[in-house]
Image (cartoon, rainbow, N blue to C red):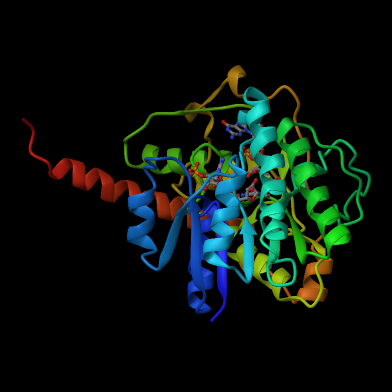
Length: 337
Ligand code: NAP
Ligand code: G4F
């Protein structure tokens, strides 16, 4: 039986990865932060087989202890300050967590003498490309494209990417970086635009909400389904050599496209009466377009994505309608005092 340690177990990808590794019969340890994390109870309910270790990416000794305690064959570093807009407002925290946290993980592997044993996955991102240097029209960014991050988050992730590569080259750690384009689904946080939209569309459909506020609608993203992408992470650590791989769909759509598709799911063609534009949601710098080229992951790892764009939107809207209906029914069932 293999053992995996996951940081970011309470996040979107952490949930999908825990389910995948459980199906593959792994012993799973997850790092949970905070002395009273509200997500803990729900996590243990859904994943009773995950062994939780209290640790924080910001505390190197706690990560070292987590590695020592779990003795992992595979260490997936999914934890980060992951919201681009938030990173502009909290740049130092983003630097310490999203960049420095990676170093703390790699050092924990090295300092506990597990360079030969533990394979490391770093959650790199298409935000490192930044969009502006888009110089491969129609082909999409691949592993050899130039980086030009456009946010404190993107800059911090670039450090994480390079320090993982540096530990691979300097100490021989099996460190692979997945350069993942946006991936979404029913586990996505409501602070990200896709889930914000599908959550609101479901509530508008059920009469629980009248409208939603959004920032820029013109940026384009390469959106896939998170369940497909965690399979790619796992494949990277099963490969015979550590390397970097882009995971993407090879298609790009604007926020407006996503909005249109989501409202169509509830038979509304004109979404304009339901959407308010908010200046406060516009970022100091924007990534205009992201389009990835997953050819290397497809040919070397045999990775393919199964969910397409309309399938992703439908899945999310339907999930949110079912989820909101259930919550509303529960609330409606409580007698008024
Ligand atoms: P997410 O849902 O935002 O989850 C982030 C996780 O990081 C949460 O579990 C959070 O814990 C944890 N975390 C934050 N600060 C921490 C700290 N100081 N110590 C320990 N844990 C901490 O992110 P995701 O969408 O699953 O993404 C997973 C990773 O892939 C992230 O590194 C993200 O930057 C990267 N990525 C994501 C995408 C995407 O489209 N989803 C694309 C490319 C790369 P709490 O629950 O306690 O806050
Ligand atoms: O959903 P978003 O916040 O995702 P973003 O910025 O693309 O970042 C996500 O994907 C990255 C991979 O490329 C990850 F590394 C990162 O961790 C994260 O998962 O915003 C998408 C687009 C942006 O252009 C944003 O300006 O939607 C635009 N947008 C418009 N209105 C909004 C909103 N974004 C959010 N979050 N909320 C809005 O109301």
